[in-house]
Amino acid sequence: MAYTINKTDGTVVTTITDGTADNTTSLQLFGKSYSGFGEGLNENLVKLLENAASTSAPSTPLKGELWFDTTTNQLKVYDGTSFKPTGGSKSSASQPTSPSAGDLWHDSTNDQVYVYTGSAFLLVGPVYTAGQTLSGWKIETLASSGGNKVVSSMYAGNTRVCIVSKETFTPTASQSGFAEIKAGLTLNSTLSAVFEGTNTQASNIDVSGTTNTSAIVIAGGNFLRADAADTTTGALTVDTDSGIIVGDAQELTVTVSSNDVTVAQTSQDKDLKFTVNDGGVTKTPLTLTGADGGIDMTGDLTITGNLTVTGEFDKSGSVINLVDDAFIKLNSGNSEADSGVIVETGDSDDARLFYDVSENRWTAGEGSTYSHLIRDTDATADGNANKNTKFLRTTAAGLLTVTNMSLAAVGSAITTSDTSSVSVPTIGQVATFGNQWGGSEKTVSTSLPTGGDGSDGDFWFVRES
Image 1 (tube, rainbow, N blue to C red):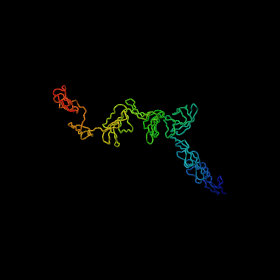
Image 2 (cartoon, rainbow, N blue to C red):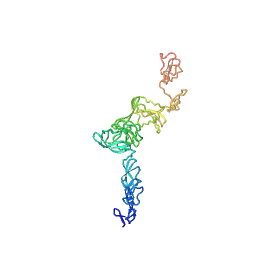
Image 3 (cartoon, rainbow, N blue to C red):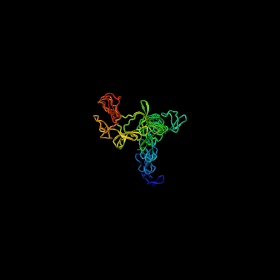
Image 4 (tube, one colour):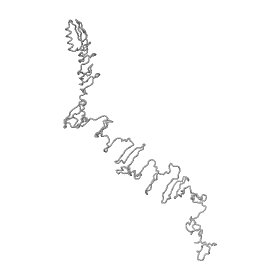
C-alpha cells in the first residue's frame, strides 16, 4: 500500500508507492518494502545533524528547512523563497552576505557591532574604531566633596577634551586638565582648547592674548575696550552719519548730513579750542568762541590761497600794519568802481584817497569834497595859455609865463644898488624907490622937502596931489 507524506500543516508533500524511494525533498523518502532503505535513512539522519552543511543550498527545500552555509559559516532557514540567516551576531572582517533584517555583525577588524536594517548594516556601537581608540561622548561619575557627580565627557583619540556638567564642582580625584568643572561645558586646560566657528552670544571675552590665529580669528586682547582707555593700531571707521560723540556731557560731536561734516561744541557758550605744543608749552592758536560765535586766533597766520572777507576788517591797536608785498590790489574781479582808502576821522566826514574811474585820476579829500591829485603831466610853464587848468612849473631855464601876478611883500625894502639881486619887489617897494643911485634916500611926496629932509645928493620927487 502506498505512503502519503504530509507536512506539519497537512499539506501533501508526495505519495510513495511500495518498493520505491522519493527524492521530492532534500531527504530521501522510502516506500513500503524498499530494498536498501537503511543506508538512505542513515544519510538522512546525518544531513539533519549537519543541517545539510554545504557550499550550495539544498535544491528542493521545504519552507522552514535549515541549511548551514559553509562559505559564510552561517545557519540559514528557507523562507519559502530563499535561505536567510537565522540571526545572531556574525564576527568577521567583512559584511555577511544575504543578511536578514535584524541580523547582527561584529566587525572583527574595527571591533564594532552593526545591525542589518533590511537594506544595509547600521552601526550600533561603539562610534569609534579600535584604531581610533576612545572617541565621542562617555557618561562618567566623578567624586567630589559634595558627592558623586554624573557628567558627560567628550573624548578624541582616547583624550578627554571637555566635560559637560549640570553644576560647578571640584573633583576630589585629580582629572588632567580639569582642576575645576563649571556648570555647562568645561574645556581641557592642558590642550589650550578653544571654541571655533560662529557664536551668537558670549558672557565674557579673554583679553589676555593678542596673537591672532588667522585673519578672521582675532585674539580677545585685540578688541577695543568700552570700559577703559585703549589703543588701536588700525584705522577706526565710524560708518554712520550719527558720527562720533565725545565728553561726559556729550560736548563734542562729529556728524554727517548730506555728505557735509559738522564738528560741534554742544555746550552753551563754551569754546572749541585747538591747541599745539610749542617747545613744550601748550598754546592755543585757534579758538571758536561759544559766547559770541567768533573766532580768536593767536600767533602768525599764513594763507597760501586767497583770503575773502565779506564783512568788515577790524584791526584794533595802534601798531602799524606791515605788508611785505610790493602792491595791494583792490576791487579785484569786480566791474570798474571807485576804490581806495578811507580814513575814519573824529567827525562824520571821513577822509578818502581813491581812484576815480570816471576821470581815471587819483582823488583825495574829506567830507565828500574831493579834488584830483596833481600829476607831473598837470604842470605847465605857460600859465597864460593854460589858465585855470594846470599848475605852474618853470622851464629848464627857470622861466614862467603868466597873464598877471599879485604878490604880497617879498623880501625887504630896496636899500641897495646891488644889481645882481634876484629878489622880486612889490609895487609898494618900487613906489618907495625903483632903485637907489647916488644918495642914501629917495623920497616921493606931494609936499616940498624942508631943510631937515635928506642929505646931500638925495633925490626928492614931488608929485601933484
